[in-house]
Image (cartoon, rainbow, N blue to C red; front, top):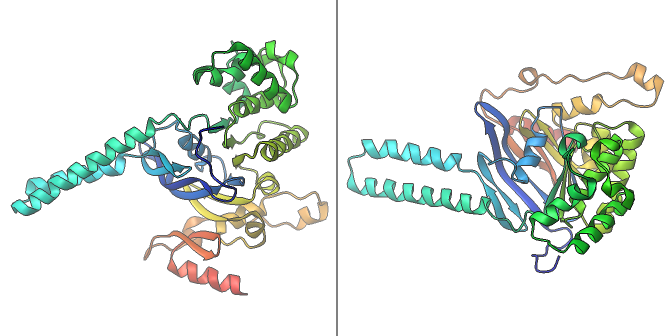
Length: 354
């Protein structure tokens, strides 16, 4: 890890600013902002299709982001260009209709500035020095592991791509990674189809940790596993986090798993981040109606409680009135943010005072 910029425990490692990821008319992620501190586990939760996975994939640059900025260790590693292109288009329309020479000069200068921003964004997106520092564990292990490659080749692929040529070094790191995730050296010569679902997910974890990353994006790593194997994988990630000093962005639709593993939790709904707080605060004092709906859906191992449990349904048109003012992410309590307008903000402040 020598030669890499260092971030101290508790300092901001990753910052996402106004991230938008659009696929034609589908706003998969819409103006999402958050930061992750060094050494913490940040949980991102919400129902299927809310934009959790897209957020993670945008951070690791599997997508060219539509707009917004992503910073890692204080340096911009990704930036969207759609907003700049729209600014240029609008300015050119005004330029055609403008007759004043001074204003024309201002518009031409503004267009040049926006073009410079686009060039800078593309340059930042091509940066490779942080590629090994951020790794991802994918949701479906069998789909993310090449069936034609042995486990050794799969785990070593990142090392080879990043210039490691010494076979003895590669072999040593692969074996160490296998042992770290609870597998043995003999597994290195086998193919993915020869393993169980839990073992395949461990191979995915080994592929990530062999690069000695600082940030791991775990995209629903236990959703395809049964309960006992889920616990094994979560405990493995927790052990590796402590052992290697990892920071984790943990993506899941299961709030109970996220609560167990995460320090802070962000709740997403239809591409928006609707609530953000510490794990304990979110479960004790949920404020956004959608968060309350998610919490009410968590089953409890108590038959009597389950008989009386009432599910809270979230209906946006019923629960919000945004005809006068659109919502933004506001800090209701220190560290507790809710997506709301001014009227809702005042209501939430009254609730937390009680």
